[in-house]
Each structure stands twice: as C-alpha cells, then as structure tokens.
Picture 1: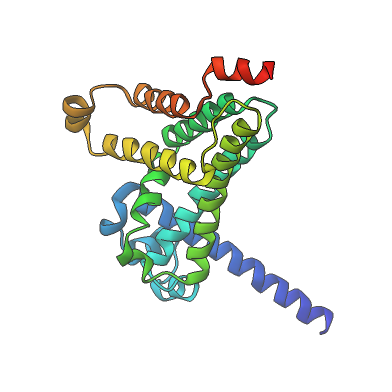
Picture 2 (picture 1 turned 60 degrees about the vertical axis):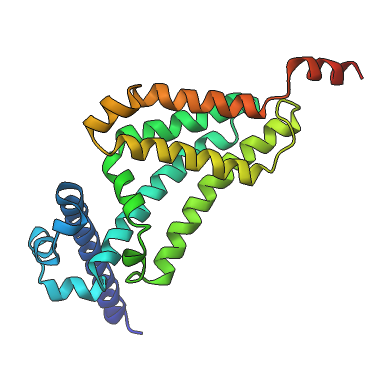
Length: 226
C-alpha cells in the first residue's frame, strides 16, 4: 500500500471513530434524559448532526446503542472494583469496601445504573449482537469475581467460615441490587415501605452478610490455640 493510501485509510478510521464517539454521546444524552422508550433514533441522529441512516452503519438498532451505553457503565464499575481487589486489608474490611464502592458508583452514576438493569430485559437483548452482550456479561462476571475473591480471602485468613464464595457473592450481589431497585421505585415506596435511607439499608445488608460469614471469635481463638 502506498503512503498516500495509508494516510487515506488512517484518516477514514479516525473519522469513523469520531462519528461513533459522537453517536454514543448523543445516545447517552437521549437515554439519560428521556429513557429507552421515549428516545428515538431520529433524535439521536439530530443530536450528533448525522443522518439516521449513517447511525445504522455503526449500530443496527436502538437496543444495540442502549446496551453499548450499558457496557460503558459496566466498565466504570469494573475499574472501581479492580482498585479494591488487591488492597492489603482483611476480608471483612474488604467486603465493606466493595459495598461502599458499589454504593458510591450508584450515587454518582444513577442513570448508568438504571440502564444496566433495564438492558437485561429479553426484548432488548434479542436485538443486540452476541459480541456486545458477551462484553457486558464478561464485565459483570469480573465484578462478581472480585466479590467472590474477597470472600475467599476472608476464608483463607480464618475470618470467614467455609462457604461457596461464588454462590455467596451472587446472593449478596442480588440482595444489594434488589434493595437499590426498590429505592428506584420512587419516593412514595421509599417513604412508606423502606423508610430507612439507602446507605443505612445497605449497611444493614452488609452487617447481615458479615454475621453470616464470620467465624465466631471464640472459635478463632480456639483454632489459634491449636
């Protein structure tokens, strides 16, 4: 390939990357502001000054765009979890750090959080490429693996009793997400049913999890004496 041809290819690749970035920015704004149902491909096209047909060259459906935004959110959460994984802290303290990081992510990125959960709906998944779904599932599994590793670290340190760390991680993950989704139902449900602030409710969930995991101090002392 000649030098001029190489420059043309590089220029086109850069233009394509810039268009894709602009489409995602417009879609992010549309989904965050109006939600999945109200956002339209026409509106997204207007937001990035591209023809709707051009958008379909990059994303085959509104659902694919939506899940692409979800993948961004999962990537942000994974980075937060990765920073915790190798901290030189005991397992019970690390578990609290993971939960606090998840709560902080929710507080900072509520709109990403809502997309992450609506994206799991079967009607959305059916119109999304398998590769993109796999990317999202891999990020979610890696986040879950951090949680599982923390539980296993507590077991290895003698702080936690023997459990299936992956199963317990899933149980805790589902519990925390369920609590947060209840809060997402609106102020009436929060005020009349949940009553406690979200952070306090999550700390109660953490306390229950730790009580279920911890080896009683008397047993630890006996094991140490042995």
